[in-house]
Image 1 (spheres, rainbow, N blue to C red):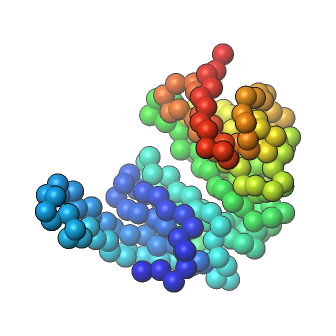
Image 2: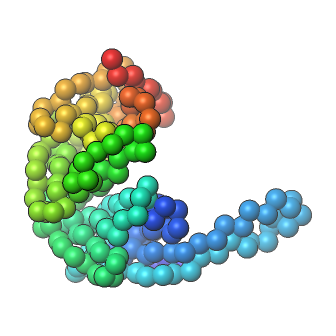
Length: 231
């Protein structure tokens, strides 16, 4: 179905669609999953998808990251390109709404939107915030309303490997991995880290907050998982 590898894929609009990127474009697919349990007929593929729309980046630049909120209805899709841009798409209008040029000194490898949690409450304007990160250029906080960088988080070494980032469910903290075998937690109001979590045996490549309890899970390059509790 695709001429280039699929870079990102996720559910979208509370699981109503699949959103994925391939090359310079992303596609919105309506899907049906065949849940037949008949062992005699499982070789018959009845799952299917239908293309709803496809949009390309300005200048047809290959995408490096794609992000959209699935936990609530949102018409905003964010995409990062190899030319170091971050582009905002409006699916209600079916077009590109804005382009942030030179968002980082290198291409963005992850975009993380503040999607909150059903177990925590935030001010409505907080959902306009999103994070981006690039190798060797730290983590940046952006506001969709102004398209400006509100804060630059530095102090975690990431010079050669794409380390993951995450928003806390309460919206007060951001976490990221690092190459020095630590995970870092930042408060949104400060550019310096508040916690440096040790005990890892390799580069921390992924971080994720528990949506209901104050816990942070980390994953390392050597395939190990750890869970940290807030004190």
